[in-house]
Length: 227
Ligand SMILES: [Zn+2]
Image (cartoon, rainbow, N blue to C red; front, side):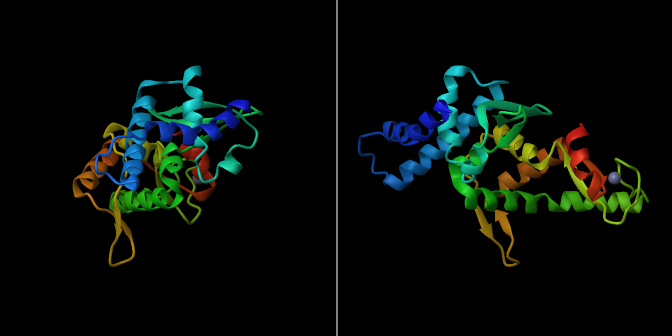
């Protein structure tokens, strides 16, 4: 826990130190935004090249993760930080004293709850039609039973493997994306402002996601077993 305590004190120090002293005409707010973006890309690259966290990186990684909006809850029983991998996509995980590992988003830690939620919604809305098309195809083929238990218990949901958050993370790391600009359209839905980014995301999603149908009961079991 000492490392975590040190990390909690470390964030301010790191950022003060990294903000350049010279007057570049950039406002303080813009400088901070730029540093956040640089940090997001840097950590994405770190995850692409590391299957585990080298000991000397732990304080720096933790100093970012402590900014997670739900840190107070996340940190409970945490004894360390590790890297989780699904289908070649990596995320950070907090190791608990009972040996379990809980995923934690460094992007949410950097950009905060609201921005992360807007970005997530916008990205979800961007690929919504891909999922719906898959569901429509399965229905037209009469294959509407759960892929896991092969029952037809009413509500069947379409989802993807790796799980959505891994797909998002994989995409952002692949394209070195930092801050995701969004807007709310006339129907009240968050959308990606950058059309090229949206097209790339749709393509990445189609190429990478494995689609499956499952009943609600099998949902959790399925998302962790399908490869
Ligand atoms: Zn099922």
